Length: 125
Image 1 (tube, one colour):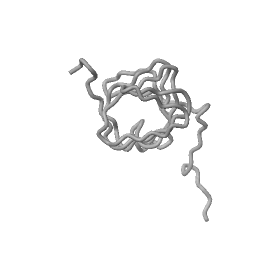
Image 2: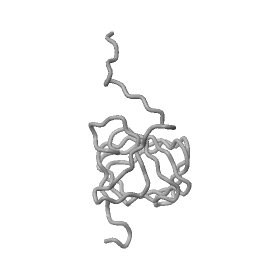
Image 3: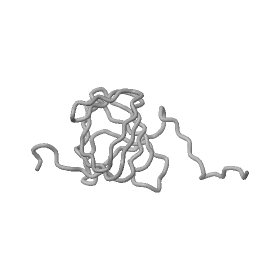
Image 4: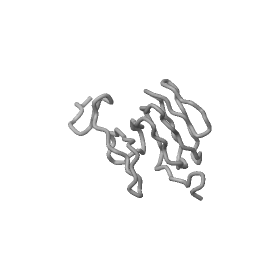
């Protein structure tokens, strides 16, 4: 077996790694951020760790590919009232539309197959 060469492995601890602020295609930011080691994919696509600050609500969006996440810290409340807590492993089918709220912030380990599509929220038609 050959040695692992520089550039073939990256290691970052989620407790002190540098998270990148998430910026939407229209330039909007909400304080959420992403820790993603694979730089060949758009930010927030593939496997990453996602942080939502306290009080944040995600934009309504449609999944363009399946999404799976594991709640590591905090609590996440979906728009239908479903509450996800640490240890919950969640799967959304491609095409699912929703938004989520993190009253006290949360940290998720996420895999998203493709870029999410922002959709109009209630009253935004």
